[in-house]
Amino acid sequence: MARKILIIGGVAGGASAAARLRRLSEDDQIIMFERGEHVSFSNCSLPYFLGGHISSSDKLVLMSPEKFLKQYNIIARTKNEVTAINRQDKIITIKDLNSGELYTESYDKLILSPGAKPIVPPIPGIEKINLFTVRNVTDINNLHNAIQDKSKKIAVIGGGFIGVEVAENLKEAGYDVSLIEAMPQILRTFDYDMVQILHKEILDHGINLLVNDKVAGFDTNTVLLGSGKKVAADIVIMAIGVSPETHLAKEAGLEIGKTGAIATSPMCQTNDPDIYAIGDAIEVDGKLFDDKWKLALAWPAQIQARGVADHINGQDFLNPGYIGSSCIKVFNLNAASTGLTEGFIQATKMDIDYETVIITPNDKVSLMPDNSTMFFKLIFDKNTRKVLGAQAIGKGNADKRIDVIATAIKFGATIDDLTEIELCYAPPYSSAKDVVNMAGYVAANIADKSFSQVSPNEVRNLVESGAYIVDVRETPELEKGKIIGSYHIPLSELRSRYQEIPKDRPVYLHCRSGQRSYNGALALQNLGYSNVVNVAGGFLGLSYYEYFNDKTLNRNPILTAYNFN
Ligand SMILES: Cc1cc2nc3c(=O)[nH]c(=O)nc-3n(C[C@H](O)[C@H](O)[C@H](O)COP(=O)(O)OP(=O)(O)OC[C@H]3O[C@@H](n4cnc5c(N)ncnc54)[C@H](O)[C@@H]3O)c2cc1C
Image (cartoon, rainbow, N blue to C red; front, side):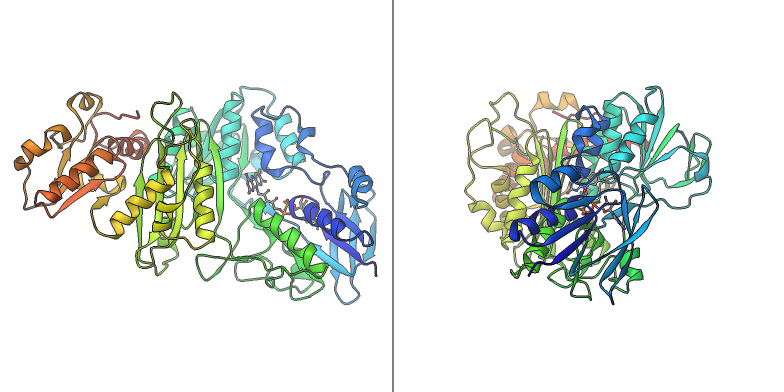
């Protein structure tokens, strides 16, 4: 029997659910309500219109209501806002925003995909500024129209994905951009040590990046920061995060979960089995931790959209636990992450005995002209050896490496499995031993205690406490910078000069990337040294780790100069 299925929200989740519902049944009546002017647009591409990568905002819209009707027999009503859900009578009330009229529609099944709205807190003076948010095509057009004058100063508040992408695109378009973040770092899907690489990239491209500084208020054309700094801004873009659209669900008595998002069953049903909810508005299970979380990403919305359409049509669907995989372009760098970060493990006090690996290999055979360093961090469980998370940043294909790790985590892989993953290889693409394999080798070595390492973020303390650090790079390399107070014994002379190194204290070895010093550390161990530690990431990793804070905190550097090659 034909059913009437209504969908609230006509973009990522809503439009995908509608299309899948139609593929599974020709009989059902499907009506999609969208408050905004457009259905089925590419939210994720919005920032790239600002940067000129997408020539016209019309191109952001992937499907029109007319196409939905013609191609799929789906009724899509834009500028139609659902204002109430009457669960008793299975009726929703809709306000036609063109005419202002209210009308009702009955349903057999209802799908909520209302998404999440930008958070705009009532910061003192907010009425004095020219404020914008970025959620839909109308928003991006409004912003675009407001910045026709290239001399405008723009402040983006919030260093999450949307804030960074908007700031990057505006900078590329030639504006004077400040990016303001209250936390000590942007993009918390990356750990503090890894994100310094992105801080540097943003600073080097001329964005005034201010971290660890909260917006305290606004004055006319000015952002006032907690530190007392004032940032001139003709335009302010608020991108401090999103909050799930739950008011309709709340008013209808649907259960709201502990995170403040809509609670659903594993089949994405709310506490009313005829009402499903998907996308940014719902909370989901963590796959790597035993709790709920909000994951405002397109992939979960897509898989849930397909899943509820299947479930409504009698097929099995179980909303999976999510590990959280994401990627972002930051000027010339590609950055991606999946699974747990150290920051998350520590902030949520997870009871995991974990270890990290940082490596900085070439992403391709070093003979290839476009090879570049891939900064890679792996996090694994010391007891089970299971892979928990990874982060990759580089000019090359960071997303490819992280996709492999995401797949590995999905199937419960261990660090030993990473050494055995058989990946495709030719010089233009990777090395015969890919970054992922190498991370597995290093992790296995550390887990087996065949050597130990420190991360770049531990070196400042070592230098300041007078630790014994040996630089094993060859002499010409030191001209480009060295660690203050370090000793120099090139790897090529280590075996003949090792007696110069004391045996009664920890010895830290570093080279350019951590590879030669690893060999040096093993040599010393074989020569009877019991407390040798490799500096992961080497001088390159250290240069990236120290640079942004050195430049912005006015502190004493621990390196005589940086070397980013
Ligand atoms: C600028 C930007 C960049 C992004 N980049 C990425 C990215 O690179 N990768 C990634 O994975 N994710 C990205 N996302 C997130 C991704 O777009 C969302 O996770 C996804 O769109 C969620 O789908 P959804 O259906 O839940 O919500 P949405 O796609 O936001 O759709 C919800 C729609 O419901 C409508 N609505 C709400 N209430 C009502 C109502 N009462 N009546 C009628 N209509 C209503 C809203 O107007 C909205 O258009 C980005 C988001 C933005 C804004």
